[in-house]
Length: 284
Figure: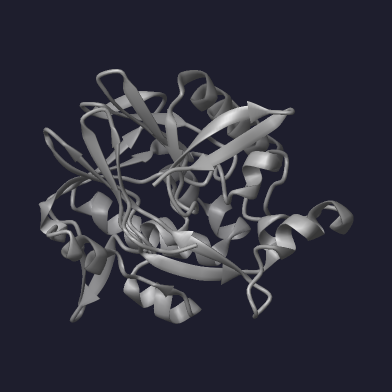
């Protein structure tokens, strides 16, 4: 496994993984409350010398005829340092491709977990500023409403605080669009409700001509979720719904022959049905 930039295409649309970095996760946090005899062989193959599973953070840059679109915003430098993640590298990865944060015209946020929205803002002196000052930002209304609610503060105080810390300045600047249902947010860029991981989690379809690619975001948390689509995580808000959403998205991708990629996958690939589950074939 490596964490390098990988270009791929959906028709004439170029997509580019822009690595934000990695963080090691406890295996039981990713594949939770499952019999050890069912998981040990597959999970242990992923564990590093520290007993952790290295998980990539992979925002994606989409180059469209109408401008640059960023799918998710990384964890951010400050939070990466706080939690000890080897991450917060999104802006450097963009710069290596000749892209400045000011060049981004649209940021699509799959959901408001901190590793996806922590890179939206930073403190500059005594003020918090937007890192993508020229971009329209899109998130599901259900997602925004949940993370700004008292219920989220009661359920997940730290995560709710971080979500508000980074989302509210964007909203207050008048640059946050709250959406519902399937919707084209730019030519060839369509958001798809994919709840379960969080209440308003979204996937993103990218299409041009007759080719399609699908950003699964956190509907898949790792390659094992293809062989074991029923395995869920403590980080999934509604675990049965997360598993149903995963199968719905993977079935559609298999039917359409779409390339799929995810925030926590090492790269893009093709998915096919196999023995009641799915076969994942990485490309590139």
